[in-house]
Length: 160
Ligand SMILES: [Zn+2]
Image (cartoon, rainbow, N blue to C red):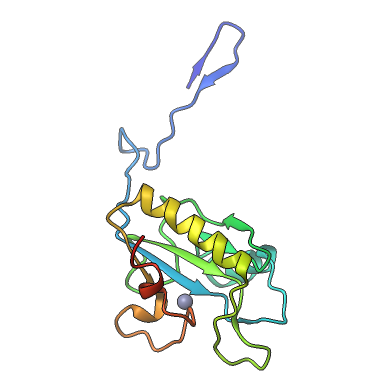
């Protein structure tokens, strides 16, 4: 930490691991899309997601969350390993949209036009930052027996 002549902090060196001179940067090879598995007629705001995950994992498992109104929230630092895809968390980012179930509770692509636009905007940005990362849906990972994210993300974002 450096201070100027008035004792003000001018710069702070961030160390992820105090034993290392430089922060350890993890490489991102997968961007995994999820849904919150909540009904399209039910609100599941980011605050609800955060408190639900805090109880289950102690932190928010996804890195990004997109609500039905098209707002994108960063819910975890990209350099921190998430909790969203068993066996694939180490080198992935988790992106979740609010919804994924119709009003009767059946799996459905409930993305609103605003959500679709926000998702595309976020994925373009993430792909630029992590060009080697593959984009796929949770259900596209091996041995996943879920419908999440309830649409064919791998095909939809293949050209990104
Ligand atoms: Zn999922």
